[in-house]
Length: 134
Image (cartoon, rainbow, N blue to C red; front, side, top):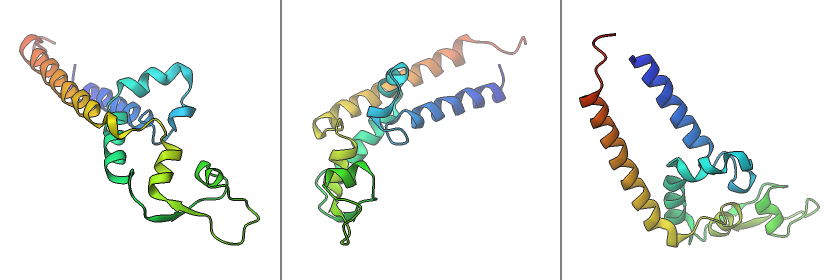
């Protein structure tokens, strides 16, 4: 009913959106109970579209961190004396295998619909709810 409550709810929304976007917690490691959040919150769609359009065909060489999924996918071992290197595009494929260039348009459609929905809810709340009596 006040700005502090709105800020707290907004902060929780942003936290959940970032937490379950697939960046902080890999999509295959999100607990089953929270998988719905991965598909509902907009962070997943923002990062998928951004990562795929920027990095999917990037042939820049990067060094893998020992023990990481990228390191294992390259077939490297801790005993190797040479640095374990691969491309950014392959890193994206290994770490975000469910991110696909074909989904970019769906991500855009979801985000546009999400913006329209939030605008409609905001309009409804501003015109229908009256907090002056509290």
